[in-house]
Length: 341
Length: 295
Image: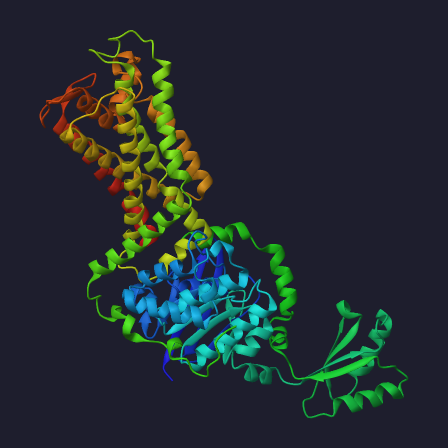
């Protein structure tokens, strides 16, 4: 497999803020590669460096072996870029926007016409092609933007948070379409802060946190690496704090339980990490019953990507989102996206 | 909703569009293609949202009508020779209209920046990003010529007379030169300033003061000494005065003195050179701004 995208020791600061401290990953040709991380982790900045919208402070950015810094035009030719915020000209019809896009990529007019028709068809946009994009719903806008990104049949399609703000049906349409793209041989690089999205779509991924890669590999590999199974246990629907604490102490004394934490946001339920090979549920049930504890619910599962993130950073992705939401300077970010460097 | 098919060839990567591996076969053809497409976009916008053009035609018409009426009873001869104020005013309104239109040229670009549409252009393998500048310039130029035509017609109707064909060509040339420089200035600002609020502020403080500090509304001899100096340095004056001369004289040539400053009188050829120098100066000044964004 040839390398489609190579990012090595990428660094990028805006003023005194280091958006990217050290990011490296490789995307192989033909795969769907995910960049997962909370908002503000540096995903979009990485993408901007790749799409030649921002100039890296240090490190390598290569597309098909071509440096994005030295030969930006050749790189642009190979990339399709679908930004997080869909910027369409609301006065143009869908078809007119695609015609403009085709001219910007220098498609010959006849070929452009065919491409536009086939992509409109493929994305279910034919009925909307002659309407102004100002009248489109969020899902339609995203699909038109996808069509625009694919007009010139790029080697690599970059999607920055493709399903943020989309309704469930549109999200499903986008997911399904990415599957078709992959089957057709187009490499896809997708960023997301939705675990399920990356888990469901990506062949491989890199998890980014605060400007560094904290893990990369296939979803299965990453989960394998954190090890153990997860058990969620509710003693009662809402367990009082001290009861949960007592149960925790008891459970931690069991040989096959590696760790136990109390999840106060979900009625003081207990999250256990147990050994993979153990017959955890049956043994837990026996131990609890023997000590006279009731069981409201109990479920065992393989670790999720969130557990991978938790193991690396000590917090869940959701907590990181919450923390980031409080400290982000959205105005500064907006400015950043307007300015090239 | 989406066509189901296991493998769709039209979704596969295709190298036939990637002529950029080698230096593009015809960068000039590419440049024309993208410039044409970007210009077309601006005209589609204009066609579906013609309010800019409508306002841009109504405003100078109001200037003509209201300023004309304001000085309607001024003593004949006050503005020189056998001139009524309407005749005096028309060249001023022509230049001022072209000037304010050009000064607004940066606004659409600024909105494209703010809405992220510019990023769509910047990630595309444009032959040269100057096509973005070229498209805006062509668009503003076309608007200015439409406006100029309307004002020339309206002032003829209001009794200012009509220059001959050579005079009209010369007027077009002067309008072209002033619009080119000011459009470039505005586009430079659109890339340099942080947002549209700042751009509008700059337009606001530039627009009317430059009008009043020119000979658009009153001749130099009416002005305070210091304002005469300012007006004689104002590029607008160098566009207004030759047009005014063309309106009043059928006989003129490249060496005909067409305007007076407090210091010297200047011939038509020199005026054109001064306007050219103004354009060259602005284009040079915005180079670093554009390169910073476009490199």
